[in-house]
Length: 57
Image 1: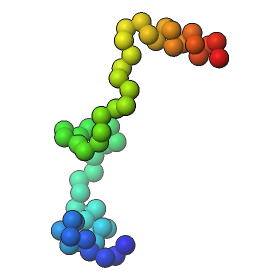
Image 2: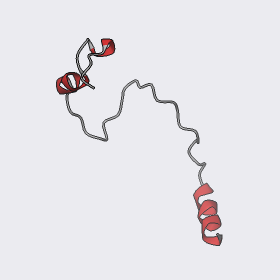
Image 3: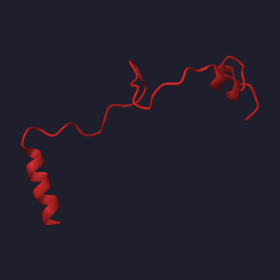
């Protein structure tokens, strides 16, 4: 929208986006607001069992 937003320093979204520095898609956040992953990494050796279950259907 063309309406200014207080959270963007009273700039329009397009004007605010123009002030941002482009980063690569693989850039990670140092401190982000995303929740932690739902699943934890599998313990050692579990991948073989998972592959067997997938192959069995």
